[in-house]
Structures are given as C-alpha cells and as structure tokens.
Length: 213
Image (tube, rainbow, N blue to C red; front, side, top):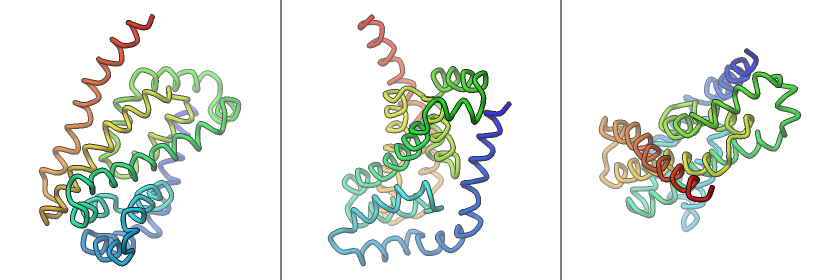
C-alpha cells in the first residue's frame, strides 16, 4: 500500500533531523534552557516561543520544555495560550503545505485507490488521530501532513488540532508555572484530555451537521 509507504517515508524524514540535532536541541531547550533563552528575547519572548513551537515541523524542538518555560515566564493562562498558538500553527503549517500539493500530486504519489482509502480513513478517524497524536513525539507532524495530503476536511482538522494542542499547552504551562518538570500527571492529562474533548465535540459537530441538512 503506497499510502503506508508515504507514512513511513514521512516518519523517516522527520526522524533524520532528530538524529542529527535532537540531542543538542534537547539540551539547549530543556526547561531551564528554554527559560534562559526566552528571557534573553525580552519583550518578544512570547513571539520567540511561538516561532520555536511552530518550527517543530522542521526541527526537533522539545516542545514540552518550551511550553513549561512559557508557563514560568507568563503564568499558566497566558503561557498556555502562547504555547497552544505555537503548537496549533505547527500543525496547520504541516497540513497546509501538504494540502497545497493538490489532489493531482497526491494521486501521483500514492495512487487513486490508496488516496481514496486515505481520504475515507481521515474523514472517519482523522479527528482521533490528530487529537491524540499531539502529545506523542514525531507523530504530530506525520499525522498532520497525512491529513493534508488526504485532504481531511479543514473544519474537522482545525477542531481536532485544537483538542490536542490546547490541553497539552495548558498542562505543561501549569507545570512550568509550578516549577515542576516532567511529572507523570502531565503526560496522563495530555494523553487523556484530547480524546475526551474530541469525543464531546465530535458529537456536537454531528448534531450540527444534521440540523443543517
């Protein structure tokens, strides 16, 4: 199945920068390193944080360390909003770039049959994949790219992306504000809240769609 090959290829593509720069960036942008670097940016620290998180599409930026640092600097609410914005932009950038390739290019890459299967998959399960993948390493970028390639409905992608990005950003922002690094509770919340949110919102979207029919 060529679609699976594209998925694996994207995973390898995003893995390469991690193997090359991952260790260095992990040290530079650990919680403490992120706090120091962001404070050096002065009043534009919030913008620098957004750019860092958005660039996670191209570089293996340790997003949780940056989000926690934003929480320490700006507080759990503002820090969470900034972190969520950066994470959301990263997902939208991946989705948009792959969607801009157009359906014709997608057909040439994966074939008509596989593309149709991918379109059905992401129309049905794409919300779950996008929401849950945000707290995992590597997979957020791959899933967002696949969503764009298979032309997952934009509204569904945006809602699912928010369901994944917002809880993670606010969780780590609160952790950073409390001065605690990498607690198990943060991982549990980041993993559990996105699918619960998507479950609730998916039901609302279905009811809204029926009312407009």
